[in-house]
Image (cartoon, rainbow, N blue to C red):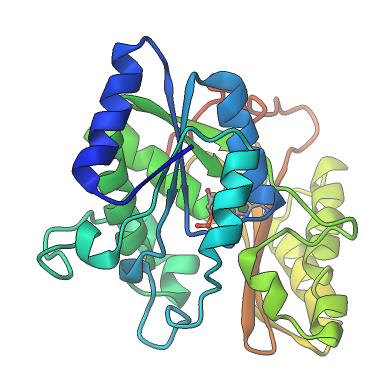
Length: 302
Ligand code: AMP
């Protein structure tokens, strides 16, 4: 496995792989790799001839009061995971290499969806995410890009960017990997104290309960939202950020559930903020194509 720190060399490595008739699989990460990242790497390894992981904690997507400085960094361990998962190349640039002229003033506007939900709680976050992902797409060139459903709003925005700006990238969505008790695996889980860790699976419980309600025919989105908020609120350690029910294609808030919906939760456990989501499909409605394959559908909202 080769570790590349310069943009030009990363571009050349991807070009050389394509010249060798290999499909490039791009797996962008911020490191502190866990089983969620591993599942993306494995999917890319199975589906592509050349796997390129990027390892870069992107300052643009962190707000002033957020955890950029303390975001977990463990490069040596990450390189071992990447090698063990069959990566061909890890692109690990410095901030100065990625943004040689300082913070870019030309950026990708995520549109209205970028200001809602996660975007409302973290202003500027999705502009930072889309800007770095656009840069990685520009460097990697024609490729498949692997992203986790764990960050469903990010995934929806990346799909929109690809649909509307036409980088030569096929987005592949990979299902959320969870701990045994349902907690979605996240690099930030290590920050939870023992009592916070014990409380955190309440997110999964609330989402699974709500998914059951929708599957059994609850059409009132307000009732589903209130149910999720009530379950999270039953744990004194959990402070709810939002509970939302959105159309899985347009990401609009709903009153009535008529097709597949995305159930979304954000909550704080002490100083650690966690997010999670699931798809819920009402009776008689066709589920969207399952994630994990290049053929899985994108969201259609503009
Ligand atoms: P991050 O390093 O947090 O920026 O995440 C890099 C990629 O891994 C993103 O596409 C995430 O959605 C994905 N990811 C993070 N956690 C999980 C998980 N538990 N299951 C599946 N994918 C994940």
